[in-house]
Amino acid sequence: NSHFPSLPVDTIPLDIGSCLHSAEEIPIEVLRQREAKWLDMLNSWDKWMAKKHKKVKERCQKGIPPSLRGRAWLYLTGGKVKRAQNQGKFQELDNHPGDPKWVDIIERDLHRQFPFHEMFAARGGHGQQDLFRVLKAYTLHRPEEGYCQAQAPIAAVLLMHMPAEDAFWVLVQICEKYLPGYYSTGLEAIQLDGEILYALLRRVSPVAHRHLKKHKLDPILYMTEWFMCAFSRTLPWASVLRVWDMFLCDGVKILFRVGLVLLKCILGSQEKLKTCQGLYETMELLRAIKPQYMQEGFLVNEVTELAVSEKDIEKEHQIQLRRWKETHGDLNCKSPPRMHGAKAIMTAEPPSRQDLRQRPTIIVKSPLANQTDEVQAENEIESGKTKKERQKKTVPPPEETINPYPPATDPSTPLTKLTIQGSRESLSSAEHDTYL
Picture 1 (tube, one colour):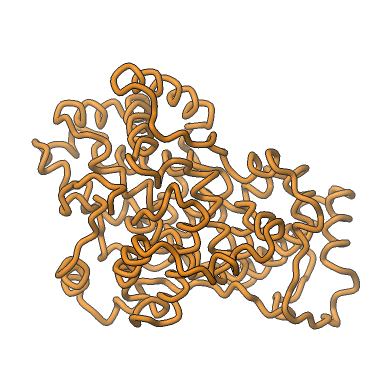
Picture 2 (spheres, helix red, strand yellow; picture 1 turned 30 degrees about the vertical axis):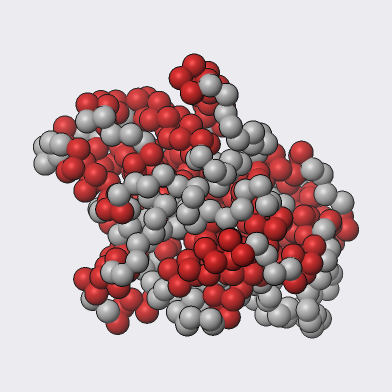
């Protein structure tokens, strides 16, 4: 892909074995309570975002229930509003044959995305077809950007949670609002963020910072795939989902925090650096991250505890931008300003109630529901019920509505039938990703 510098393939920090770690078990009663709370929020999304954003953020940190994750991501990113405001647009792009140059590159990339996941395992299967449709539509939506290889795993994760049209609009929001400029020719935005990450590391872990400086390890060598794929090809699956829940709520600062936590865990003490005397050994450590550092509970806790804010990132961004101009001149790619999460996106483009209206396929009235979720949620917000009272409410499992966003299965699940060695070989033989 012309978007990427030709870096050596062995810099890819892809640890397939790490995907075998299972998710944390959540008691079914707790899951049902969380589903009820999320249904309340989704039914009055604008009110919750305006008046109780902190609570939305807390619930994203705890993890969105799998049955509602797709719908929640659609709402958090503003993809729901985009879709409502551009009805028929995806169908129009979908019907277009596309630019042959991008079509050819996309087709060659399809079989590389989560090859062990049931959706994407079959060549020409429904998962690969939808992935092609979404990526091709994006090249028509943004012809000046075209296609970038790192967009494929992002789109694939979305398709595991939602239909193609929704996945397209969430991809648009990620590319334009959360990570603007990441997928443009020249990779200027990702290089800038690499320098920001490196500068923030000086404060978070001076030991790790000194070590990377000593060995002249350019951030783009280890953080490109982390950030451009939003850790979807680096972390165990359970951790990927938790990181995405927080990332789509809070924005890019979550990616910075995950990167900083990993660097601190891997290189943050003299003890850890004893076996890591050179550039090659350092790259090996960053390639094969120890599973305990990526474990769901540990990682989420470290990320939420790390005090790195939007303000810190924006301040450092201005410093790095000035340095860039001094050494490289003006940026070639003029990206729109970055939006730091769901609240910022909604504030910039306030939706109407019509845009947020849910249109379930089939509705069956629950005999236990004496008032609609919407009225219930509004009453709750207005009356300011305590957390305890809200938890006492018994709401039946959300089985009354057919869910168009089925929960994604772990893309690594079929790996249990294979050895880790076999998994590594199956991904590394024949073809390699060229974007790193």
